[in-house]
Length: 468
Image (cartoon, rainbow, N blue to C red):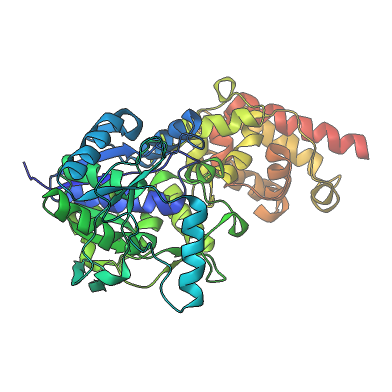
């Protein structure tokens, strides 16, 4: 097995949003491609904002997308003793020190630095202290080098360097004894043997500080890849004002997981001009080096196009299973009607979402419905009543109740009555589904079955007669 180890480390302070899902996907794809290990780590050290509800939402979103993990979920809140141990080690080794400066003192130093045109970083007041200050609260700071340059080669952005005099002595433990983000992430990645860190480029500024911690702790430095942000159509960072950002919200809007996965991976990554990828193809073709440096712009229309493709080409049995909750939300139990996979097969060609598929399927399961008023005025003329009777008589005797046999019956009636299909077809469509838009009436009749079809045709005939 490969020694490649990657991780996704969300904070459980909300749902799994599309940006986080894309980061998880990139990590998962590279781990699967390299036959390595994918770790799920929950960074829940923000006790005030972290919730079990958010943890559950993240796990649900990951599972829905098909992003399984090999280790975890590992919770940072369970690892506080480990972080404490490393803080003590750095203190003993002289690589960290206690800082007793108060918040007010630090703010005053910051304002003074800004007034003098200096960078508002910590001035190292407590860096050279040799003794303790009993009874006074303190934070623990990492003793960063004050000279030289910290550099790394980002797998997406290329070489990045930062002069060490730009960095101050990072706080690694707060005055209440809790560790800080930049410290815990390094301890976790180091002790878990993470070999490649793929994350959003909002973390680029953290990386030099983290590199110094790796070196101070004596751990090998992983490779880093900072992927660009996802933007809305107005080129600002994707947020709620651009529409749904929660992965599960897209499920509830009727999107398929494979469509969202396909769309998210193409927000930044490309493979020639190809647009459609199965998960297997993504694992085979994905490379982090093929991720672009420019931010991806979220295009709902493109996602909708992909979703329509996957519905059109989906397995009717699977789609039927996914459709059941949407039908039940509409008060329909498909168990009491025609075969749901057969229904799906008649509708999937034109449906773009599972919501559209559910709405299109309703007429199959509702024997009683109102006819569209415009269709009534346009189509349900008195002359269609005898055509309904003739069709019902023919279908009642039809043994080959398939699309072919049903189509042949319509042709026979048209020949006998001296009419064209356009003079009977729309009226039958209204009788069967209530309006003038539906799948092929031959398909619909076959799926509804003989008994239900006859009932609806005769019911429409009675309606026409009642209007005469």
